[in-house]
Length: 359
Image (cartoon, rainbow, N blue to C red):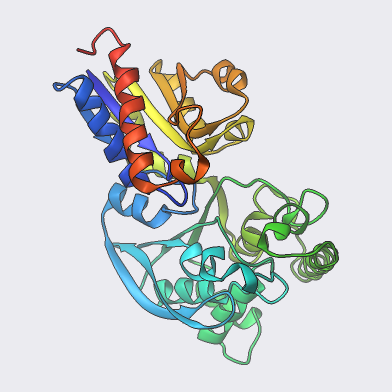
């Protein structure tokens, strides 16, 4: 039996690497001779850096940058040869501010720009930026300002553009929203970052104005492209100003580990996330993995701490859809790290025992 384990992080409980290890123990408990391949995964948000390092290797570069409220913090990114991999949340993430501090009117993407600038200074010719879990809704203006401050302090973007136009930027995210409008960055995501209804209207107005200015200046408008609204509009700035190419984060990651080759002679793929529902089918990690499995005719199992819309998930093609938690387990108990670990191990073991090869 050959099993691929590629489980997203259970946010607040286990990282992707930890969840994969719990599942591996469950597999080997049920079938000690199984071959298990662990693939840490992320869609561009939490765990992106760790997943990419597990996929391609490389070295972490540590540096001091500004957080969403312009306080100095230690951050890092990954370098492999002339490629840099950046997890935006390491500099501009919502987890870097307390709940009381959340305010997307003031939060900035400046620190992400500092990470990008440092990677370019170190000779990187390709920069992969994972977007997810942002604290801001500044349309990437903070990021642009940080790059300007590095290469043309006191100048404008036009003074910078020629110096970095040979750099290839790849955007990794699972968010396909446009920059502004009812489905844009402010209306959909700003409330969870601390925005009041009045703030949402202001942020959306500012995004629209920024897009109109940028369109007039450069003669093209990427504000309504898929992914422009990712990370508070950071996706827009990367596309409009840096020529960034938008990709599904999980697709980029799976390609980097040659996932299609790994599936050769595979009995089962096990994937999962903290909470699975119909939104899982909108480009999240488990769905991206399912698509690969369907194409290769390999069964895919989905596990999660909470499951809704089970029929929709089954109809999408998952061979197994399992909640790891017993029905009456209290929420405050279910989110404990050791409990989540043990429940993943048991659930996966139970799945393996139902397979003809499981012994």
